[in-house]
Amino acid sequence: MLRREYDTQFCSIARALEVLGERWSLLILRDVMLGVRRFDDLVTNLGITRSVLTARLDFLIAEGVLKRDLYQEHPPRYEYRATEKGRQLWPVLMHLMQWGDEHYPAPGGPPRIAAHADCGGHPDAQLRCDRCGEPMGIRNTRVSSGRKS
Image (cartoon, rainbow, N blue to C red; front, side):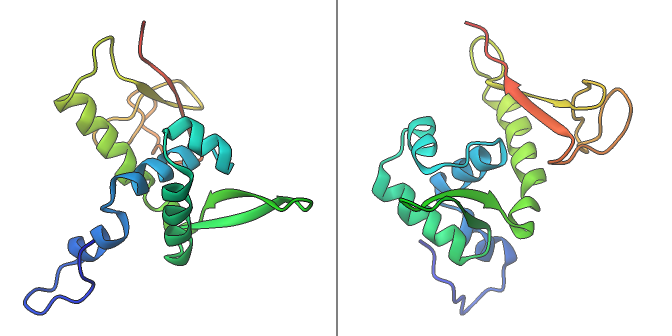
C-alpha cells in the first residue's frame, strides 16, 4: 500500500487510494451496497479467499467505511453494511461502472444495469435518471444482472 505520509505532496486522491486503492476494497463495497452482506456470501460472490476478505473487511471497518451488525448470537454471525462514509462512495462506484462499460465493454452487454427504482430510467453522466430527471442515489437505484448469455 501507499504510505500515509507524503513529504513532497499534499494529495487527497493519494490519501483516498490508501483506503480504497486495493482492488478487493471497491469490489467488497460494490457487493455490500448491492445487498451481499454476509461473509460466506461475499466469499462465494467475489471468489476471494477467506483470509483476504477478513483482512479487507477489518480494514474497511477500522477506516469507518463499513460496519458489522450482529444478526445471530450463537455462533456470532455478522452482516456488513456501508456507513454514511461508505455510502458517500456510491457515486464513485456508479461512475466507475459507467466508465468501465464505455471503455471496456463486456461481450453480451454490460454485466450490471442500473435503473431508477421509481420509473426504470437509467443514470446519465450526472447520475440523474434519463427519464424523469431525478437524482439517482443508493436508496432509489436498483442494479440487476445485465449480461446476456
